Length: 274
Image (cartoon, rainbow, N blue to C red; front, side, top):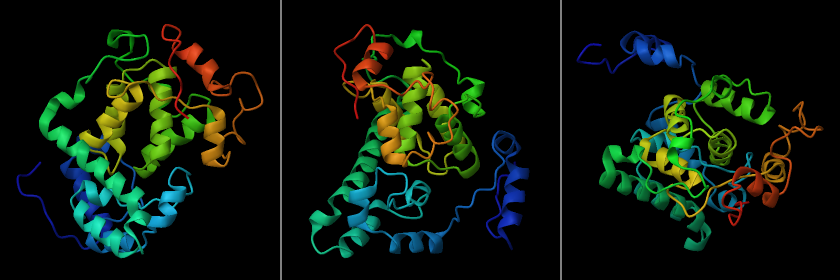
């Protein structure tokens, strides 16, 4: 890799080809051409399309009014204060913007924790609240998850989406992290590394601390989900095509109480988060 990187390109394809040559190791890991457009103009277009009121009402649904701003925040194209001011200018009262601004606040908080911790962001902040210790979780991500061949329509679709688009809805990130950690007993660090290999908006602060929140090493209990929750927020798009949907083999198709007993037999007092 040369010391001075080019900054001007005639086309996006020329830029991509150049980056492949300069960073062959990264290209070998993930060589997809994602659709997301970079740059200030694209960021401003996204910013103008925000709908703070609809965001608050629908953000947890996969077809909800999310902003799509995270890649531009991650790479410094947009600042949090700039987005906050734009959001407030779109609403009649600050209350209508509260949820979106709260999420900006969480991102700022993650970054402040990262400033304090540095590389310790990769260490468990606390012990697991799952009844298991760190050494009882595998250190490597299994190939069937990484390649999307688990046989679970939802998990495989999310694996494919992550690798081909560089993006996942936040709710999907939580579901996928929960599956990796609590159903498959993989250390959160393995999943966090996988996400950072592919996410356009990935940074150790938001990524790692969110994984730790799901794992319970930065929270008072683990996050889990069930099929009812998945179908509600995804409109059932995965279950309709899943070969396990009408069988007893779907690992998510039961109550939170039953899942808690199955996943955390040594801490039966844990209640699953909806």
